[in-house]
Image 1 (cartoon, rainbow, N blue to C red):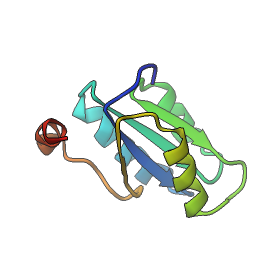
Image 2: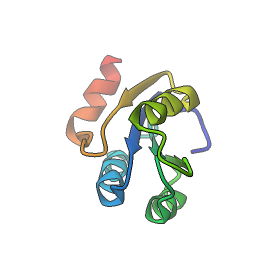
Image 3: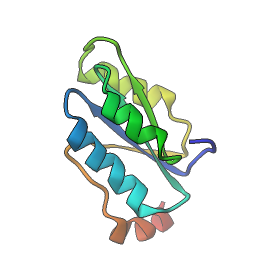
Length: 106
């Protein structure tokens, strides 16, 4: 992601690359320049790194060892510079149908 976004969706994950990719894909599908995503993994995940490299709307980072969900969440919160952020689990998805109204509300 090269520019500051209005809302950044933060996704901590550990050993669940397929689920995390679906969560990140829900951000990409929204196709709204006001929204971006950031994923933090508690272990190296080549599939997530590969996926994020193809999407300008997604930033991916990883710890070399599992530091736990709290560290991942805090790192995501520390790294975002968006006006607003939304913390999701890697099981969650954003709804592109309702996103525009939500962003307008914010």
